Length: 165
Image (cartoon, rainbow, N blue to C red; front, side):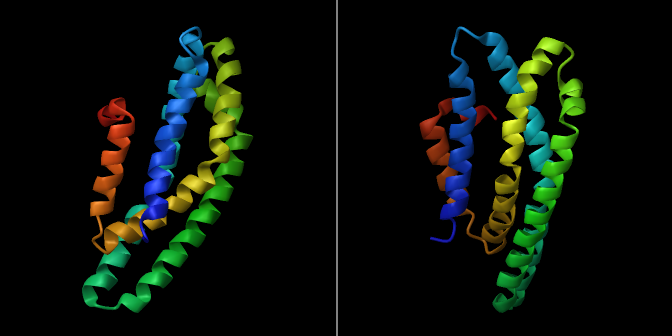
């Protein structure tokens, strides 16, 4: 049952992306386009910072392979603390520079006006997104990757379009 938070996190992000698009409906293609660009900008930021998952995975796998399983918890705990610190500092920094960030994403002032509050809300979830990274690293590090296969299958069943990204 250890992987349940990761499975829930992966599924919840798919639901969030679908809700973003669906909330605008077919009558607002401009808003849906803004949401798509803002989602990509958020993913670039989150996945770059989420590299802590790889570090956690490498250290956990090493200790697991050495048979020193008592050290795995400490590594994962340290990853969670690092993810929390990086998440809080990064969120504050990115929110402070949000106008400049949206100017990089959107040339039009009208699109910036739509994209900035949308991206702001997404950035509030960055800390939670990053807290999932050490948990993913832990699960992969101990070799329980079947849970990611199950999560991907559930995701594909719930949203067939998600298999393309």
